[in-house]
Length: 417
Ligand code: GDP
Image 1 (cartoon, helix red, strand yellow):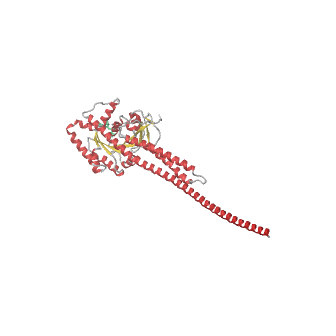
Image 2: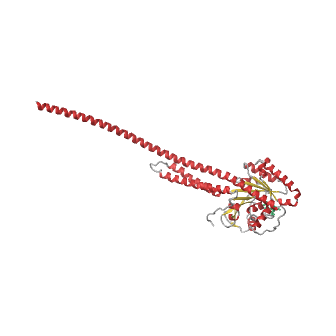
Image 3: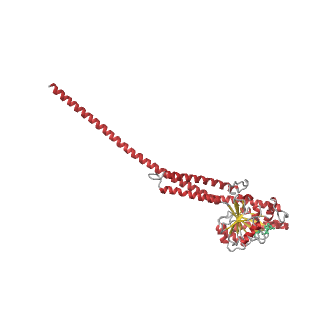
């Protein structure tokens, strides 16, 4: 239903860094919104005929209302994005399903992902998908139905299908992680277009490689392109299908260190996206199939082949370790790239509105000063007139006094004659 969603995500998860930062910056923007609206009301109150603010002053402050609204809209939709790449059948869809603890994406033979699939949280209880060019919601009840829907909707390899899945069913979706599955890098010649369309805002890239073979040139080339377009991309390498190593335990360590060295070399020396030490923390040997199976069993969901081979627990722990490091990386990166810019803009808007108000204050002060000055001059004139009057009156008094005296004198003279 459409009621407010209370986020009760896993409080221990590193993803909470992002979730809390998002809540905080949203709250800050609610305050900025109030502040700007108050400023507009104030500007209206001091404008008009003989007012202090000009219509232009009012319009300038009013313009910030829509700016703040636009940022709040973007903020509401901000999420963490991870994109998965690799050759067809390396297990990208299986990795995503394992991370989501459920079979959401169709995987396996006959279900080659031939377009981009973006899995994100839906606020309703229903699962549905939308293609890029229409607003129509296709209901999805099951994986097979999703697979079918993807086959019947004619899709190009560079088109995007949004899959909305109930947030309450997956911790990652609840915490605003968006996962993007891609067609195999071996099948597409349009790598540049892919990167421009779907990767520029990705916080993390996961290369799903096959532990049964070495990194292929097509896989490497793709990431060479990525690193020319994005500065310092965060790349994880999953050597998937590591369960295959169980059949040859005598070569396990040797094969692992060979793969690991090549991957470290690729990230640190070829791509130069991190130091060799950091690269070691970005490389994992896992079995997505086993991880998914383990989680399906935990949820008591039906599984086709419940048998797990030797060493599955160690591989599962490594998968969990990957998830933890991935969560730390994606939340920190997303906070930096998404919120740093917004908080700068918020600060600028608050400063601009304050400057506008200060200017009004200065104008008001000047007007007051002018009035006071006028009054002072008037007062001076009054005092001057007063003084003049006093002096005139005094002179008149003297004059009259003297006149009276002389008249009296004359009268007394006349009388004495
Ligand atoms: P995608 O094309 O990269 O998305 O690959 P899928 O996820 O569809 O996987 C292709 C096939 O490989 C499926 O049949 C999976 O069950 C299988 N698969 C995926 N991960 C593993 C794994 O870790 N071990 C094994 N043995 N098989 C796997």
